[in-house]
Length: 237
Image (cartoon, rainbow, N blue to C red; front, side):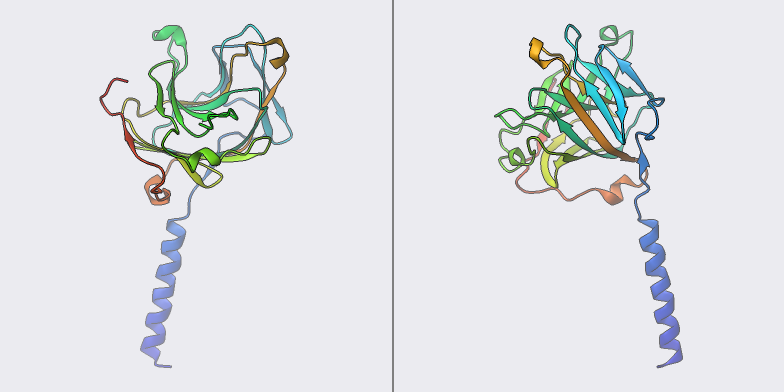
């Protein structure tokens, strides 16, 4: 083999390896697996415990929506986690959300990725908790409505990059939203308020929570044609 050709081939191979390494996602755990020191409970009195490698939320009567919220705020990020929820509970994960005693008496408000098993099948949709209501219901995303599996672990992915907010469940895209109201905020695991006595003590479980905050534009997933874009910028919904 020609010496110059071999040298060029080796150099090219090294460049390709270095390029590949530079694009490797630098994920960080959102939950350290040992304690909840990076979180605080907001608004309600539902209970959160650690069980093996999971965070478990437990519903309680006579309390409003409760959130296990990060003490840190996040702007652009990609968040992945797995969740299992009792079929009698509605839940969600807040992101880019706000809890300020000077605003709404500290009520958590902002974007929420829906977790639910109701017949409407809007899991993965985007709800604006305590503010504008539904921003991305899954009324027009028929395939997205098939993503969530009842009584099973479901893997979520949330991409919040600039004004683009997208969600996936089990690899199926659910939400494709453009909204610029809030660019940074807390992430919160919700245990929803309950209305019936028999819902007391029901569980929501989260595991494998990890977040990417660097180079997120290089790791975004392609948008699917079956997930129509909804643009709510400056519409004051």
